[in-house]
Amino acid sequence: MLSRINTIAFNGLETQDVDLQVQISSGLPAFSIVGLPDKAVAESKERVRAALNSLGLSLPAKRITINLAPADLLKEGSHYDLAVALGILACMQTLPLEELSNYVALGELSLDGSILSVNGVLPAAIHANRKHKGLICPKSQGEEAVWSGLEEIIAAQNLLEIINHFKGTQIISKPEKKSTPQKAQYADLSDVLGQETAKRALEIAAAGGHNMLMIGPPGSGKSMIAARMAGILPPLTAEEALETSIIHSIAGELKGGHICFERPFRAPHHNASTPSLVGGGRRAAPGEISLAHNGILFLDELPEFNRATLEALRQPLENGYVTISRVNAHTTYPAKFQLIAAMNPCRCGNLGTPGFECPRAPLCGLEYQSKISGPLMDRIDLQIEVHAVSPWELAEAKRGETSAQIRERVIKAREIQTKRFQEYGHPEYHTNSELKGKLLEQAAELDKESENLLIAYAEKNNLSARGYHRILRLARTIADLQNSKKVLRIHLAEALSYRRALPDKKK
Image (cartoon, rainbow, N blue to C red):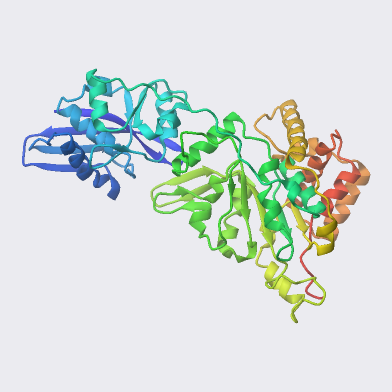
């Protein structure tokens, strides 16, 4: 007796077909799984045995062999449990094999026969839709699968429901797509009193998708400002929402059957390891930078992060993806995130505050800030100083513009950019931070006077080619916020003001 069930394996965001073959043959009773299974897959035979026993079904006293083809592809995870159980039931003629061949199955089994949630249901449903097959998945994740557009979805609570469904004694209705959740309630930027320069820089960063670093003493409001970044960004497009939700589904962070229409905001602690930030581990799981795809990665206390961990951000910041290399596979995850970072000017935080500096100032500030390498700093478009707000300023300051008001300007600026990219024949671009080569020269063309200003600044500050181009992108965004078709000298001058030099060791 031989049966075959369709299931899948994950390699990053890619899904690969797995042909799960079950053979029950004569011989000494045995239950073996072959085809390069990991520990979780190898243990599935015990979960399947217990789940079938809970239904009053016993495995035949014969030799049961499960083959996961292709045999040279590593099979990881507990989502193979359901396919193994269905294959055995089909081999025992409890389920119709011909009908099962039209479905892709994944789910983890409990000992009582219930089907538990697993990671990756959304990309599995998209894969099944592409292959013109249905999907059998846990009931708790049926609403998640509906977002793929798949019509044939069997979201069952336990094995008994699946058996009854195929026998016709019970009909499992297709899960319904849950309504889009209400917008997330973000803290408002009007709560930040003073700090007009920082709020202006935040608006520019949001409008053009630029990276931003805030340097200032403790309590000056750096984290408070960064936390309000998500509230001034436009919502995700449908394409971006699906792409972001696939990553969160692979990581097991897509809850409640909703896909995410709000931009992610990830804020890992500074003791985060390189694999947790970039991605990796035994299963090459997505890291914080991929979970922040199409959103914000906030790194507070930037110099306190491990040096090697920070250096690992350089390639994703430039290319928008990260490749995790292992002995037997290379996994690529998208990582097009916006970096917002904050740091103190020195370890004690009082550098530049008269009467409170330590005896080693300003050398202590140079040593502390030099933990951030030049190449990484070169990838940060806006580098601003955030000064402490005095009690008198707090008492007299009035609330400024709300996040909603600023968000309107940000959305208009992004609409201008989208229209420009379409006119240039590059609809794949969305923000000025992505501009490169001739497209950048075309979008941010300078007059002779502005060009001389930029060249003089670049020579004086030993600016790299990357830094030169980042200033052009920043100036283009400032011009878009003012609805200016050309990049003028005033826009370039403001862009240059956001490039901050490290403290001079000779002072």
